[in-house]
Image (tube, rainbow, N blue to C red):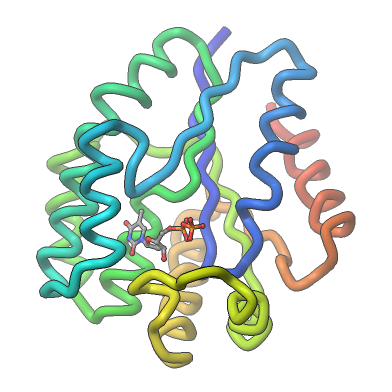
Length: 202
Ligand code: TYD
């Protein structure tokens, strides 16, 4: 079987994590081997970088470079081997998050990240990206109940609105792989949307 690379994206509080297990179960029920992973993180080095980037104050460019450093390791050690073995790789976030958070949120030039993207994974893109989208006020309300928020979750409302807008621009630019899911609905309704997307896969 051919490997498949699936990524989940969305603003903090969009609810993507609630659907991870269900998505994995869907693929497993079709006989696929599923590798679940996340960014930043996914490897021992990546998880250490995650701790740093989520909690230590730093320059926006340092933040972007750490995201791509962790990604380099992730691709080498986890993503490529799993795809080569024919597995379905489901990553909770990937490079679209860098364009949304570091460019949209922090204001870095997209040209900067395009250089890093070409360096780190010129010949690899997700086969499918599920973008969980919802008004940021709803996401903020969901996050308000979350345990100890990280540096990104603590950002002000404007930051999250810019992140959302950047994600939606990216979806417009890459309609061949990014599918927008209305994350403002309840669990069952979101699941119905996901099912429709999965069943339409070639
Ligand atoms: P998140 O998936 O929200 O983790 P959790 O559900 O455990 O809170 O991811 C951590 C944060 O990292 C999230 O706020 C977005 C941010 N991030 C970036 O800013 N750039 C990136 O390239 C990636 C992968 C994540």
